[in-house]
Length: 448
Image 1 (cartoon, rainbow, N blue to C red):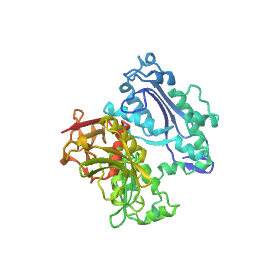
Image 2: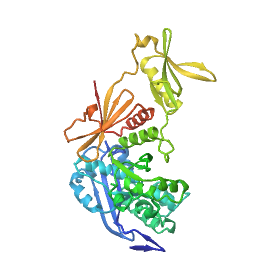
Image 3: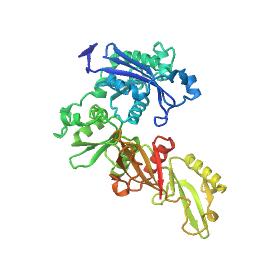
Image 4: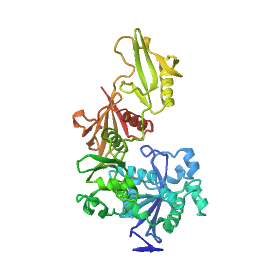
């Protein structure tokens, strides 16, 4: 055990990592440099650093930012050539980085591309810094190192940034205010506070620290809490350790059992969480989901006219498409107006002007829709290196999801093979749209 001041830190080995890349998207970008510093909680014990050939040109603005040129990486090893060494270097460690999800997801994707799994527990020095040093104007690495007088000369080179993050990490663990930090992230809950005989250390140890969704149930087998998580074990332990609050005490009192679903894909986790929160209304989620439809496009048919109107959600009335805000809907109407050469009219509706498109002439016949029900599949990463997740969508209805196995599989899946199906819910439509707009998926496959 390592003792600092009057508190005990769990005996662990840490690895502080920084990477440089050709771009910010893990699906299209590649790594150009990796640095990793192994730390035992007191001192640095080993280092790993190398340039990496990304097998594609480095954009000029990235070259200016990092100072890493195409010439510098031309003779550098490919990722596949250093993957096993890096895997061994970071084995049995806690993965730490500044804005950890960026570095971790990039590395995990690089491993997936060569058919290897990479799973580590992780901690973020941004989050830890907010607790250790509250009230700073910024927690970016460049700004916080200035505030704390940490050397950062040559920012945006992996080795320099990893060393600065290591100094930051050392300052964090020496702060007495951080005495519960490691317990909060990786400590086991106090089982004496949990009345259920079904929840013990053996159960907790069986929860994978992977991406997915976990659920808490009461004795009637009703879902009382559901949450998506990049690291389920860490977040379950954290939730079970919130006994200081009234709601935390009530949850522990009602809790009877736990289950979880490793999903691999962020998209699947978002869909799963949204559906269960909205449909099952778990008591300790309060029926809330972060993405909420507030406006919608409604098709109005009166006599010989067909109009599309942007209005606030009308309860019980079917909409063609949903939006989180008026301005998101207005942007959609402007785009539709431009593509169809139909001018937007602003029709007086009480105190407001309602954006309206007259579609009478463009529909050409009864029953025709400007929203044809195209079917498509969103293909993304799965639960293992050789697996793909597939979300089945028809029009705006998210039908469900499943998984396909095999390197050469094109991602197609029949509706009958979906492992989870959804009823039509506007929130799922919004999740899909926002996810695809960011280009975070691997592929979209359209079919008849």
